[in-house]
Image 1 (spheres, one colour):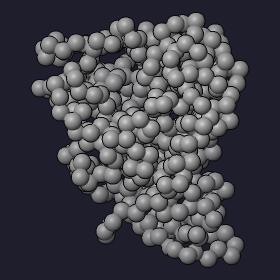
Image 2 (cartoon, rainbow, N blue to C red; image 1 turned 120 degrees about the vertical axis):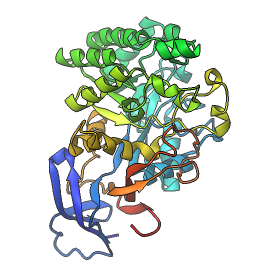
Image 3 (tube, rainbow, N blue to C red; image 1 turned 60 degrees about the vertical axis):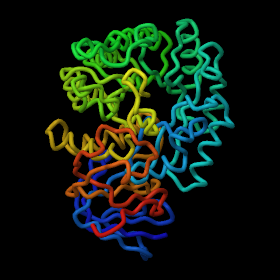
Image 4 (tube, rainbow, N blue to C red; image 1 turned 45 degrees about the horizontal axis):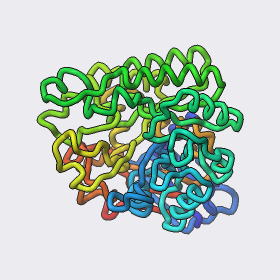
Length: 428
């Protein structure tokens, strides 16, 4: 379909574009910016007056729950929720059940999302077979099947020799390795940040060192093997400082933080509010502020939803028994935009953190509105105020501390591969 998007504020951080202009889509490809290509006849014209037109968002970490936990979410429900949140591509960690440790498993996820018309899935293949942290997976086959990198999800590789061998193998193949910095011995008994609130509530804590020790161990091996590595979900000031120093030394490392880590702190746990049972845990206000600063300076390359949908029963338990995580696909964009309102980053930097920067570290041709690229486009209304609730969102997950909170900025339309994949009902 030929589509003309006219009169919107077009922002493409990858190419420093920020102008009120028009965008033209033909046969799933961006065919023109500003000026229609020769002979272009639109089949649909979209009036984007008052809207921001930006690349479709790229989410570096979203658990879809299928296969293995379909009562929490499915490829169909969660990739459609992604489109409603302006997300056109997302990375799925390997810790499904069964794990994404074969080419068949990776291809199944990609094909299933495509057949259902959802957002495009970029699987992360397993570093070890069955995530057993012992025997290496066939990383070459996983890469050929479409995996953007490899990792072990939330399953730690305790044996340093195995981790070193895995990084060497990945380096030889030129693969990006996704690392979750969590020391299992320091974190396994904890349920929130180890600090004054954990003491006050009588809950077992997860110390900051559970993260920083694992980052330090990994950095030694990363620099020794020369592998490209990405730290998933850093949550503390000291972690950000370790990443910044590694970058100054020339290590090929990147990092992200879940968008909620830029807002929530240990104090939000309040009286055992299980919506704040997170992994990694919400830490101190000083940590939150340091992460915000690290995003502004580029130490943190991207923010993600770290989407972990749960059914209501998973959170309606004592705090220590509740399952960790937030359903965050549809709040990723407005929470990112709130950083601009707070004066933490300019709008182009905020949007780059969910478009151009994730695309660059993944090495994929996405996250841009450049002519000739796939027409993955998000149109959002920066003025609209809305309140997400379990009934109003598309995800199957019922778990978010941001439900019931008024947000500014709502997706009006999402184009995926040139087709209108989501359109907000009702008048703008």
